[in-house]
Length: 444
Image 1 (cartoon, rainbow, N blue to C red):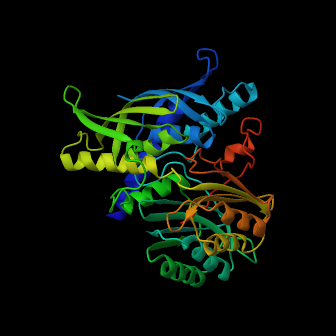
Image 2 (image 1 turned 60 degrees about the vertical axis):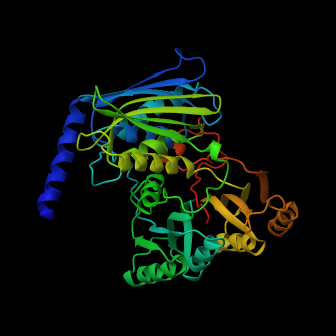
Image 3 (image 1 turned 180 degrees about the vertical axis):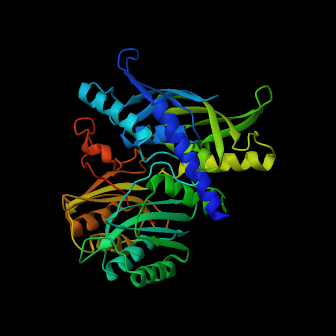
């Protein structure tokens, strides 16, 4: 049975490749029709998950999607995106515009690694020089410090990682190498030891594999969805009026379900919502996206993969809860701290230990190593729930170095720090982030 299923999937992939070769994606970039954004038009043969593929490509290019009009009824996919760079400006560099169009074509073409089937994740990132670790479990103060200490003791070096926390749950995708060889850890006994010790610390689910092959942010959404982080327990923290407003109604004439979202605008919002709908096995047929000032509006016309609209009140409520969770996962509570210093063995463990010993809980963080430098972003709050004492931050900065650690702001909502993307190396003039290689390790 497994052999027949695998053969069927392979046949589906080969058919999709044939269709794409016969009808390659068309990408047109228009910089004249809109005064404050660059317009990207993409036409392609329709296939399951293509909307997520396109949005993921634009997001990985560090482009902000301000408006979108998408239609995918029938066999053809047509979409229009109004995008800006990370500074909210049009992309005026002609070379960068050509490279963006070329990268989208290659990413969606028949020979790309983005060919999806329902058994695979969209946006496959091949790697053979690191070991991928996935963690899920219950969040608690100091958890990142404990995980980092275990990895240091096991002689593992964190090359890149990303971790999210939401609604008492935590999920992480971490890429590590052997401290001595600098390569992937392939020894089954050692992998088993890493998994056992991390599972003991996390008291949750741990997976260790020689090759990381999934777009990390897509995988984090999948992990938190599977861990049911959308189920709220106890009192809801924060201002309830600031929570996203999601509604789901059925459109009887066309047999669609219409999902409407209103929430604060931020980078990667469209990716997060499309990712969640795709992972919940819904097909998106039409989309209307708009953002004005700081508010975002999204409207989706969807059906389940079996062709039906939302069938019950329980299903409708689950769609609403899961989309709310997807929107909230990137919102970081606390003070934003940025650290840049020469990398060294055990640095992450040392930093998180200092935070823990000073009574700070890291709610989210992004950690990268680039050109032998650690470029990290942490969002921290007082572990007791009180406002962070400025004197505590002064003590930490004195210990780590005033110029090494910079305080960026209180309760700063995510203007998501730049994410790593292979395209950063192509478009040096387009991307204005401080580090061209900023993976993330989010803390617990």
